[in-house]
Image (cartoon, rainbow, N blue to C red):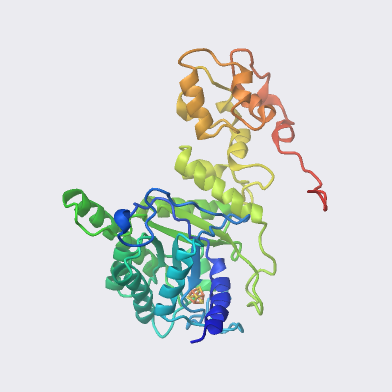
Length: 415
Ligand code: SF4
């Protein structure tokens, strides 16, 4: 295969992979290649992520093995009936590309997914072969994220986990009904069975690692999944509930949200327009509230509009919750426990840690808090400081307008 052919394949298969958002590489243990042993260790320099403006990770070589597929998922540009140019790498070509890009310092690792060729087992074998060649033949110690195919033999998925830092299995749609309608060849129970198997293997690997230092690691950066947002009628409340259930049952590292993109020659059952990208952003914020701010899934869902089930787009979900449950405010920054401070809109985890450290020595004034937040005007209705107490917060009908970010007309030619 000539170099030009490989470039053409790369153009097709890197473009086809861009719809998968689940490629962050956080949380891995690092393989040591000190002393000139091996290749691609992240030890000592760490993994430096590059994110595109839309939030997607670009520090990995992110490709499909092939964009041919025997399935016909309505939302997917690579589905069987799609009229796109097809390409397919051999496992050896993926290995050569990964090593070449790594040596040129373009990437820190590989994110590999694939359409389904011939069968789920055959495809999974090919994916595992790439990882095995990289690890065992080339001693590659960089990051590898493999997409597992839920219908594949669990033994193949297990082998993938032995070579990969992270394994992910996409739930695809937030609801079982949405999956049945838009991806009729996929099965929600099979997807969840595969995630359960991966979870069990991760637990077993961690347990073995505690008892024997030399025990093989299984997906040390855990498993993640992705949900497509806006391709079906699922509300933000549905999505939050599904994500919470997945975190709870499979202890996922991350749930990624990918706003549906209309595709050429789309099926008539798909929406004609993509959802606002801000919707994806608000869902990520709601995810953070559950993972880092102590909100129960039910509480995050309460930030959504009770009629539509959708999170507001003009304000973040933490602020939306505070406006809805004003009786919890104002919070006294000099006395309140950490859990109450975490509820104050505009105060992040670092700011709260700084408040807790500083108040051991002195009482905090509004100016002290102003140094920890982007806009004290938005934060002050929700807190009490040594020299500040908001008046009649709960009674102000115009509070939403006061604290919501102002809409601005952007200049077309602004620098
Ligand atoms: S199985 Fe994956 S690649 Fe194939 S059509 Fe469905 S979503 Fe697309």
